[in-house]
Length: 239
Figure (cartoon, helix red, strand yellow):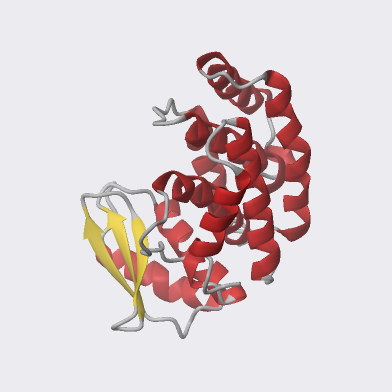
């Protein structure tokens, strides 16, 4: 069933206070494109473009981007960068990692969590077509992190573990990534547990930068200096 703009505005008015974003100006636009968000500086307001066939968690997810910016003061967490020279491949990796923090914050709301759980099950069971090894590795790493640290332990299951394993084996079979190098990234993910609700933009960016470097190193995409420069460029207003 499609969600109308009127219904979305009603949901927005109800949850603005719960998310402590009551004073933030937000307008909603229904679109045939993917759901997205950006900040319109000329109007000092956010615009959420909601796909006409989208699910309600998609809308809450975009509100989660605004919440993360409100908590940290970092606009890039809720509005894509537009600077020249920013590599689209790096942006895709950063987007996966930022979404980890967005989902951890928005799913803390008790009545939103079941929507997050349903989202994750769809997210992990879908067969994706990735454009690059680095993007597929980023998906795998973030799917594991979502499962371990955002999904409640009571909702862990053999079925979901099987999906994670299928994605992992598919990646390793199609790429030249050695299994051990993939496994070596996983211990670094435990840091997410300590900072997933953090208000400190620097701690969040440090984690994102570290994992981005690991993903690019293992997938043999660019060198560490290049990745660090790209991250600094993306988050220049937050550092």
